[in-house]
Length: 249
Image (cartoon, rainbow, N blue to C red; front, top):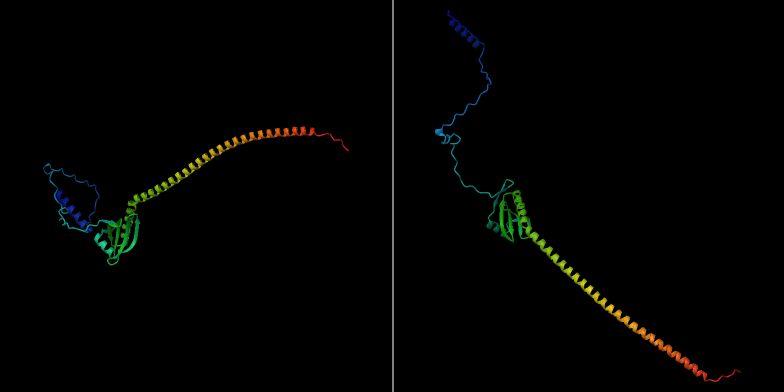
């Protein structure tokens, strides 16, 4: 038998033995797989858009109008209320006031419409409705109320400062008037004291002058009196000399 015949027979025998031993299994062998290089773009098709895939070819849904919610507080929708509707409810006494904040001309109210289970938050300025919002639950309405309350406080900051300055200016005006009155009284007192002191000084001068004159008059009168006494004494002596001397018994 030729050599290649023997080799084929040996291979067939080994294959038969492997199949008889049991079923075969596929074993995964890990190996490094390099990513295939991307093909260079064709200059002729560089400006063309890429072919649409199944995802991009999905039809676009038709646009339709939706209700616009002006704002949300804590994830709960809050809508702008119709001013005429709110005024009608307020005029009909259909609202119950839960909260009320007032600062100068600004007022914020949280009111409840029991029939519709709706909460209204309104901002008034000088008695006129400025803004009204409505919510379906109390938490959202309460959050809106506090938001508008802070806004009203900021708006009233100028009014607060204005009232403080008016009061301070009035107080300063009163203090200035009181100070000026006090100063005027002090000036009057000083002037009166000066006038009185001048009068006293003049009076003292006049009194001293009169005292000097009176003292001079007294001295002159005393001298005259002394002279008169001497004259009387001399005359008495002269008169007694004419009386005869009588001896004693």
